[in-house]
Length: 170
Image (cartoon, rainbow, N blue to C red; front, side, top):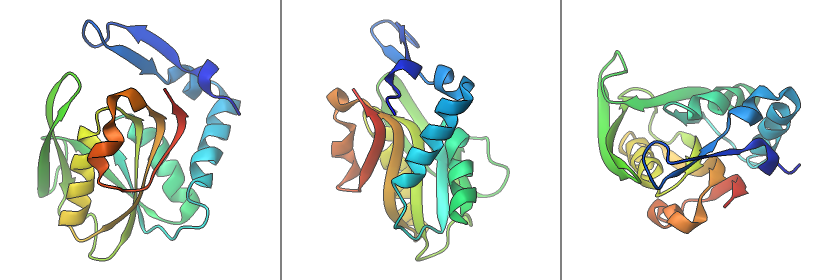
């Protein structure tokens, strides 16, 4: 299925010069949502996954669905100060600023096989930080899944050779 017609460009958001890829049209269409979920699941059909990490906030949309279908646990990675238990954190730069993400320190056990999911791979800062958190806890990053990869921003280069899949590439 061609998902491009379900992605809306928003110019100058969140700041001038940025073209934001809005996924809400895809999310609001039941058929597109189902097909996108199936396609993302298809990227991992032959993999054994113990945990699916969803990245705050749009990564939370598909990651729990994927986890449920795979028989895996779901782990949220959130912006600093949003998780209630003890955390570890990683700082990173993104295309329009800086941020810190956190994960519960007991969310992933040593040797667990982890799928990381987020909506967009842009500069790779967020995904790289999440991979570091997973590995710091002893997990093995099996793959990074995205709805969209903005290839011109070369974010895959920051992911140190981790397998990457995306439904759409711009």
